[in-house]
Length: 139
Image 1 (cartoon, rainbow, N blue to C red):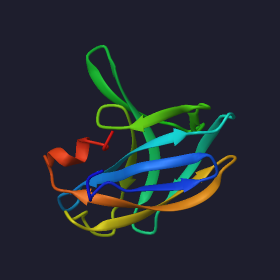
Image 2: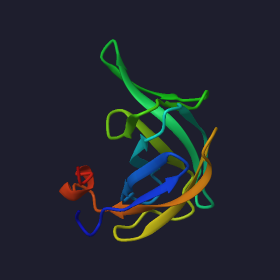
Image 3: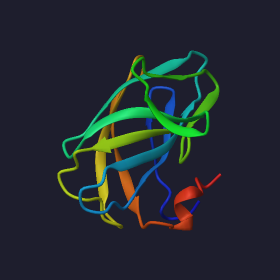
């Protein structure tokens, strides 16, 4: 597995390669990862938080040719024995009102709260814009 790949575990869940893109001053950030449920029961991501930003889960959709971002106010289901990908153009974490811009090479902690597996703090590695490695989850 590449040296930059990293993952975390809580309960039956694995959070694989949480990452973000660098952000220009004043712009929001985004967070991506894969959540793998290795258990026989579903779980749900019920909240996300960080000290450096207001964080919420969103889903990107296209309706009538217009891109829309819809907040996932009821959480994100993580089915049993399955994975859910937070990736560009789909599910993602919106990082609003950043205290400082996200810079390539740094890590930012975000707390993920799951209905069954509980709370875990994970470090999102900030990748440079257009960094091809960011998209490869090491699978």
